[in-house]
Image (cartoon, rainbow, N blue to C red; front, side, top):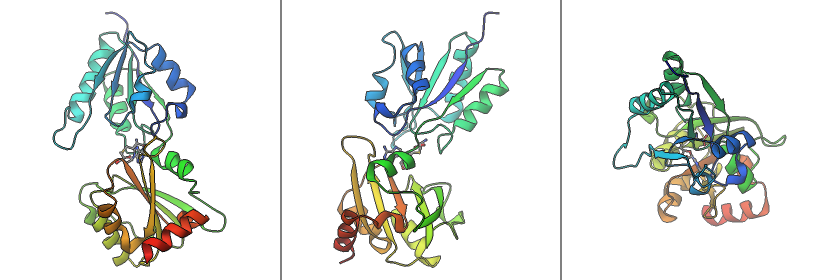
Length: 251
Ligand code: SAH
């Protein structure tokens, strides 16, 4: 038997190639095979070696091109055949990226795995929009939640948002109305400030702000599209721009 390849689970960050780690850039430069998600920006893929084979396992809303089991099987098969695989994922592989499942599948098959962290959307968006996720005067807790995981109603979000806390919601554009309703039912003030950051760290980035109660309207009126994050908490309304935008939306 020949040598087994290694699977590298690599974070591609939120979009801007300058936000890749050096490790990620170096692995891409010498890659033979890159298996990537739809979220990975084209500018990042452009850094892959011209000889590399690129396979997209993008999930579109209409259809799942490859179910997770098939992705796991693909990684394992290629590695067992002796190829190193760069498995490139948006943001960080271990934040809502199923990196844990892919690593498990590799370990179960005896395939060596290395995980290369990436800048998660929350960190990329916070920096690009200049929103501190924590702040000595405004927040000492930050939570990341999935807005779309197996039935929103089953999730217990109590205590995650509110005074002195920051809540970052991934995958929450479609469920924004239910999210606002759920948080207010849990006792969050309707005028709690929030920001929606669409296409963070990309040229098309937008930062929209308003009170929690206006979230459903904000998403519809501004035609917010995925990928976007919803950040809820006082940290989103600390600078002058934020205060002005918030007042406009609250009016
Ligand atoms: N592993 C990724 C998250 C994958 S889940 C990470 O660590 O960032 C996909 C969700 O991430 C999207 O629905 C969106 O909420 C968020 N997201 C990813 N890239 C983004 C970007 N450039 N701007 C805003 N949100 C983004």
